[in-house]
Every structure is written in C-alpha cells, then in structure tokens.
Image (cartoon, rainbow over all chains, first blue to last red; front, top):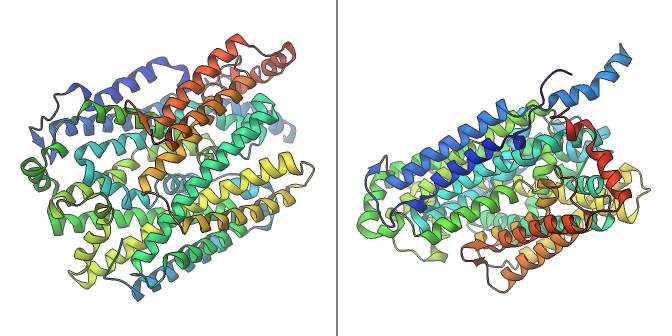
Length: 86
Length: 503
C-alpha cells in the first residue's frame, strides 16, 4: 500500500490535450489547395501535421510513463501470498 | 504484384525462410505443460517479456498490407495519406482508454479471451455469445484478407512458379504446425523474426527508392507542376475522413481480440507500458515509410489507374532489382519480409480465433465440463477447419485490399462500449450492451452492404458505434438492472481493481 495508483482515464486534461493535438494534426483549418512553403519535401500543412503527430507520440509516451501506474494493486494482491511463504 | 525478376530464386527464399521460422519457433517454444492449459497455450503461460510483446504487437498491427496496400493509397491520395501515421498512433491512445485497468483485472481473474471480460462484467450468456460471434465474424474477415494478400504476394515473388492457391496452402500449413506445437509463444517468436525482417526490408526499399527515383522534394515539385491536388491542403471532406479514421482505427484496432489478448499476455504492467511506448513511434517507420515510397512513385510512374497502382510495389522492385546483383537480393529479402509480415498477422488471428472457439464457444456453451486440455484440443481442430473453409473463400477473392480492411472494423468496433463504458460505469446494463452491439453491427454492416460505406464522410462503423453508445447510455439510464443484479455489479466494482484510484 502507500503507492499512488494512477490511471490515464481519470485525468480529463490528458484527453483534452489529446483532442487539441489531433485537431491540429488535421488541416481542416487551412485554406484549401495551398501548398507553399515546401519544408523538407513536405508542403507547409503536411509539415505542421508531421510536427503535431511527433508531439502526439511524445505525449502518449509521457502519459504512459507518468500517469499509468496500477502496479500497487497487483502488489497488494501478491502481498498475502508472500507473507504466507515467509 | 508481378515480379519478373524472381521466379525459382523466390521459391527457394520462401521455402527456406518459412522452414527457418518453423524450426526456430518450435525449438524455442515447445513445451508440453504450456500446450495443455488455456492460459499456457493462448497467453504464453506467465506472460511475454518486452521484446516478444513489442514485436508481437508490432507484427500484429502492421501486416504486409502496410507496404502492398498503403503505398498505392499514398500514390492515389498524395500527402493527405499522411493520416495513416497518426491513426496508427491513435491505436495506442485507444489502449490507454482501457488497457491499464483491464490488464490488472485480467491478471486477477485469469482471463484468456475478451469474452471472459463480458462474462465477468455482465454475467449474461446472451451478451457473451453475441460478443463472441461478432469477434469471430470480424476475425474471420481479417484472416481472409491476410490469406488473400499472402497468396498474391507469394505468386508475385515467385513470378507464378508457385500458384496463388498452393502458396497460401504452404504457408498456412507452416503456421498451423508451429501454432499447434507452441501456441502464443511460437507466434510471438515468429512475429519477432518477421517484424525485424519487415523493418529492415522497408528501410532497404526506401533507400533504394531514393537512389533510383529521387527524393521527396523532387516528387513534391513534380506534383506542384502536374498534380497539385495531391500536394495542396485537401478539401474538408478529406479532413472529415481523416477524423473518422482516427476514431475507427484508434478504437477498432485497440479492441481487436488478439490485441486485447496481448494486454492479458504481458508479463507485467511495466512490460506492457514499455512495449506500447515503443509502439507509439512505429507508425513513422512503417506507414510513414510506405507513404514516402508512394509519394515518390507519383513522379516515377505517373498517371496510373487504381488497379494499376495496386501493382506499384512490384513495378518499383522490378526496376530496382535490374540494377545489380546486390539490389536484386535486397528486393528478394524485402518480399520475403512482406510475406513474413502477412504471416505474422495471420498467425495471431488464427490463434485468437482458435481461443475464442475453445474458451468461449466450446468451453462455455458446448462442453463447459471439459478439462482445459480438451478445450485447447477442440479449439485447435475447429480452428483448423475454419482456416481451410476460409482458404476456399480466399481462392475467389473479393474487391481490393483496402475495402476489406475497413470492413472488419465496423463489426468489431461494436464491442468497444463494453470495455470503454463497462470498465468504468457500474450502471451500464447487460440488456443495453446486448441491444447496442446488435443494432450497431446491423447498421454498420447494412450500410456497407448497401454500398453506403460513409455518410457525410463518417464511416459506417463509426455511425454504428455512435448509435450503439447512445443505446448503452440511454438504455442503462431508463431501464436499470434489478436490485439483485445491481448488488452483483456493486460487489465487482467494490474490488480494489475498480476503486483503486480513490481507495
């Protein structure tokens, strides 16, 4: 016991941030047919999308490491058995 | 995908590659103890470590279709097909919606298949049966798609030396042997070998495409001059499809039965988190690479129609292979990798299919008193019969690859509310889940069958899911469970796995 249990679904801000990143990644808000400038072989809108999607991956990895920790529940399950063995 | 440059060499490569996988998997996974229990056979006993779990997740999510089907899609759509990268990443977000809690609960109650969750949460045979039927149906379609892709790939790489029919049959027999002997452990080892081959093959192909046909900037300038539609900001309808695919694939692929079983099979939470963290970057080097290859081809092979563009990977490989002996063999290995990738998706599906039959249909409804050894045995036998039935269907393949790919999600995604709501909302009732799943599946498949795949840019699966969710919420609020049933649910939700955060 004592260890805090964390579950991503419980943090509303995570899902709000996710939706914001996703909405940025889709070029619905940019003028249709526009292309320039070309950055690293991508038209500007696709480049924005690439950058936001890199942020998406980084964000998900961050969430998994910082806001997902249910192991305390598993440890609690194991404890009585370990005590018995001891 | 006709490859003129191979033939008998291709035949030898496929035979040796398949036999190598067979020997390696059987050597490392054969265990009598694991073979006789449901958990041992279908979940690899105590669970999979980071390496095996990561590669089995990777090889399951990405198939040979990722190269054969996605690159031509990029060719036809242009830069907008970049959507295939984020929607694959969203599968990981989909997992985050339910995997943390489901993993803990699955470990506690020794779940083997997704239907175990339905049974535990709703305690209704009707709900479990309908969910199982939906999963079996969707998995069947998915397997069919893989078998068709496998046959085409093998006929292509051997330039018809191995006909389509015999190619599928040969690889299916190899898969069935190692699955029969080693279960999930064997599948995970095969997935690891195939996953590495796919990554290497894709990168080798990308480098050679750059060298032979020029880079992305050249292709971009060509598009500006000749096909500006493929490089300009796409119209709103495309953005809507883009968003629709986020939901469809993000949720649909996360609730694949074989994906859920990998959540159960993870050795521990740390292993699962590490594997999923790596998976979050994989779309860049998989669907992202397929995208770039497809875009470069717009300049290299302009003006192809839909059916011709489906042959593009083969066309490019023919050109590259003619450059030198080295190029020839790299292309040969790429196609062995593609076939391996299709195999590794198919083997996971076959195993999951077999587990649903043995644990849920046979073990729950036909012969509940049977011991685990018997359940595993009948799961294998019926699974093999279904695979051969699908093979007959595969020999008369319908439509193009991508259309079949969308078909399976629309049915499968209808089981999602039972996880997304059922894990967190105790008022959710079994009758609302049952009606929601059936209505969602009927609407989604009905729309597809009548040729209405999308409605105002929204895929039929998403529309079915929205109605399904609505039925689940409104139905649960209007018609609550009886007091007895409510007490049972209260009891389940009062365990630490459900209340842990607040405890």
